[in-house]
Amino acid sequence: MKTWPAWTKLALPAYLLAWLSPSLCFLLSDFRLVSVEKVLLTLAFFCVWHLAFASFERAVYYSAFFLLVLLPFDLFFFLVYQEPPGTPVFLSISDSNLIEATDFMRGRATSLLCCTLFAAGIWLMTARAARRGLGQNWRCYQRGTRRAARAVLALLAALMLQFPAAPAAERLLLDSGHAGLAAAVKKADDGLFAPLANVRPIFPLGRFISLGEFCRENTYLRHAEQQRALFRYHARQLHPPAARQIYVLVIGETARADRFVLNGYTRGLPSFLARQENVIPLHDIITPFTYTNLSVPTMLTPPLPQEQGRDRARSLVSAFREAGFKTYWISNQQPIGMRETEVSHFSREADEVVFMNLSIRTMHMDGLYDEHLIEPLAKFLARHEQKQFFVLHMLGSHDSYQRRYPPAFDILQPSLRSQHDPDHHDRRNKLAVENSYDNAMHYTDYVLARIIETVGRQDAVSALVYAADHGETLFDGDCGRSGHGSSGRQEFPVAAMAWVSHQYKAQWPARVERLVKNASAPITTEAILPTMLDLAAIDTTQLDQSRSLASAAFRAQTRWVNAPEPIDWDSATTRGACHLLVAGKPKDKLPALAGSGHGLGNPKAR
Image (cartoon, rainbow, N blue to C red; front, side, top):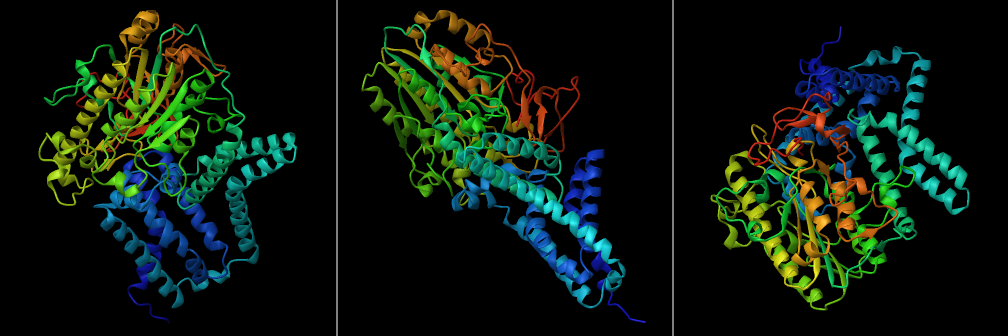
């Protein structure tokens, strides 16, 4: 009788544990029926995979990609975010760069290394045990069973390939004049997407689905530019005033609503915005996404019917151009990541574009702060054009927080500025992280006030709207991490405000009155575009008056957020130390965020 070394007896249980570990982690953090289903589905795939091979040894060898590449990624992501990685993760990675990645990994490299060693150790142990004969009875399975299992795997592979293949096929059919067939392909693609989307949290199937969906979306984005060339707002300004007009949209970065001075959070720091007249805080606004490359397009483009898609629409920059405005895009962010970003596509629609940070390294090191946006703004204002529209894109409070403000604003101490090569992901630096973030938010308050002063000095009918793209987690409560990109409730509510000049109030007092009345209404950042157009009295075929805060037709609507699946924010509950959103019953409400001066109305946070 063959004697097995003691370590080989652990190989099979450890191997199975490795396969199930992502689903088990999710089950332990959120014990619900759906979590049990994830474990069972992973187990089912495990069985199908191994039944497809004639020997256990081959099954183990060919599972190397799952265990050596996907498993460490899954476990690491769960350690950081307490949820499985989804398609937005791949979108963010593709738009990232080496410095951003290094910054993100600061203090987390050890965790990734441990996940990698765990997965690699188990795979090597099992592979060695299989070589010694572990699973040698695997050959007893019938050939028909193997064929059935392989057929299942082939079907799954075909479904994965459908994601990138369908949009390419649809485009090819459209270009060849077969619009009917293209529509059928699109319909079939959408029909398959819905059930497959539910499998995204499952390891390892979900990673292939997310990767396929990323390829699918990337293909659509490449073709979207051609579609945008055909898109028209048919915009016209109704009853334009004789006076000069200036409208400004300021896109903030990583600014939490409950850390915004106009929402009552000061920590004793003076507010520059509070000294400005006609400033209107927007207290209860959330973003549907916690990633810049998804949240910013939500602000800039109209929600279109599913058959058209938001990615095929031009931004409100084009709407202002069609209405006769000279348009400008001034950004303190970089124009490209590893590939050209979705946001930079919108900048092309402006008459003139200025990117302050052409160097990735400059953007991520001390140097250009957001007040540098004011110089080109003032230069363009000095042209005294009759109708001007500006988009200003800030760096705001993007990590690393201590790099986002000059030394004069390093007020709250201790801060990360006083440390050499600080780690803003280390909970032991919680106080310094919070102080640095609040210093950055205080600086944003200063920059916004300076922008308002610069525009206000012009003799013009002027209005400004500011909204951040997403919030941030800052070791809230017992949460062990900082950053964004998860479904933590503190990452959804964003800092936002509006401002109008005295000339604007005199020109359109009713609009100002409605804006003030609706300022505390529960909205998402989808309200930015219609509100901006309505403030400028621009009528378009895409203007939804019910979403505009300046409209008499405004009404509150269901606020859907991606967490990572779409859920109703106002009925959501949370789970875990980092307050990850979970779909709830209509009677359930989220508690107000700690430290928020206003409780954010029907609290929603990300």
